[in-house]
Image (cartoon, rainbow, N blue to C red; front, side, top):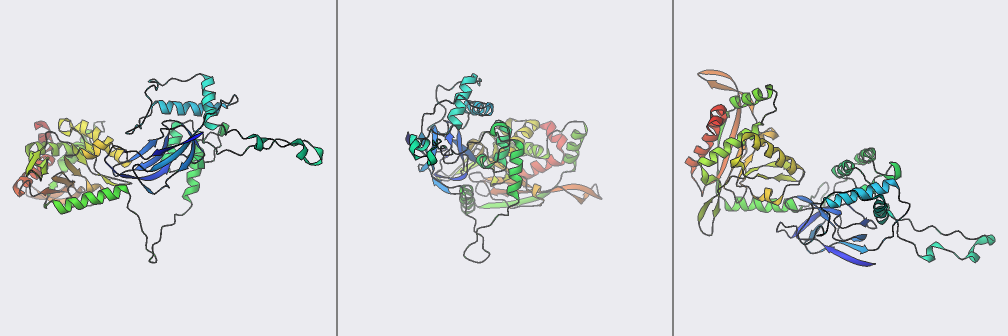
Length: 458
C-alpha cells in the first residue's frame, strides 16, 4: 500500500484558489478513478472534482468552508489491491454497477487528469461476476492481521477455546442505486455516509433522505459571533471576492451615465396572453425584451462593444452574446446566451430558460459566464421599479426593466389603466453620448409599445 496525494488542480478558469463546499467522501472510504470526491466553489461556478487515484481515503487536507490554493494538497489516497468477495449482496452488486456506469459517463474532466484513454465508449452492463468483484472492492473491509483475528488457545479462560476476535469495523460505504436519490441528497446538502439506510442490503432510499433532511431542519443554526456582542461576521467566499473586485473595477474605471423612460407594455402583455390563450405557453416576456434589445444593438453597434484603453479604440463585436442577470443562492451571476443575434424569439426563450436554470444551480460553463457582450437585467422580478445598475466590465452598457404595473396613462387624450414598466439604461460615456443612448432606448421602447410591427420587421 502506498499513499498518493492529489493537489487541487487548475480548474481551467485562470483562478488561484477555490472554496471547499462539501466533501463527497470521508476518511476511510474507498474511491475509484474519476469518482467525484468534493464540490468546490470558484469565482465562477460550483464544480465536482473527480479523483485521479483509486484506493482508500487516508486524509482530507481541507475542511468544508475553507479556501484552498491551487497546487496545495487536497486529498491523500492509499492505494490497495482488494480481493473479490464471493458473497456480495445484490444491493452491493447494483451499487457497484451504478458506480461503473457513472464513471463511464463522467463529464467532470479537469485540466491535467480525467478518464483514461482506454475507457469504454458505451455504457454496457458487466457480467454478474464482474459486479460482485466491483462491489467487493468498494465495500469489503480491509483484511485484519493475524494478531487481530486469532488468540492462542491457552489464553482462553476456564480451558475453553478462544473464539476469533472480530475484525475492526470498517467505515460504512453508502450504497445508492438510484441517481435520483443521490441528486436529492446533494440538493438537501446531506452527506450520504451520514444517512441511515433502511433499504434492502443497506441501500439508501428516497425516504431515508427525506427523513434525514427533516431531522436536520429541526436544528437551529448557530451564527458566528464576532468580538462585538451580536456582531455576525460572514467571510467572503471565492465568488464574492471576484464579484467585489469586478464591481469595484467597473465603478473606478467607467464614467457611467444613466437614463430612463416609462414604457407602455400593454400591447406586449396582451400579445403574450393571446399566445397562451391559443393553447401554447409561448415565449415569456423576457424573451421578447431580449429580441427587441438585440435588434436595437444591431442599429447601435457601438453599445455591443468593449473599450481598448491601451490603444484608445472602441472595439465593436461581430455577434451579440446577451448576458442575463440571474440571482442565485451564490449571488448575482450573468451567464450569456451565446449567438443571441441569430435566434428567433422562441429560440431565445429556450436558451434563456436553460442558462438561468443552470445559473441558479451554479453550473454554468466558463464560456457562458465570460462571453457576454451586453447585459439585460430584469430587476422587476424583485418587485422594484428602477435601478442604476453597475456595468458588467468589460462591457459598455446594461439595460434594465422594472416591474410591470397597472397605472393611469393618457391614450388619445383619455386617462385609462395601462401596464407600465420603467426601463433604465446605464452606459459608458466614453463610447457614446446621450443622443446615442436615447436612440437605443427609444428603439427598444417603441418595439415594446408596438410588438406586432416590431416582430414583423425583424
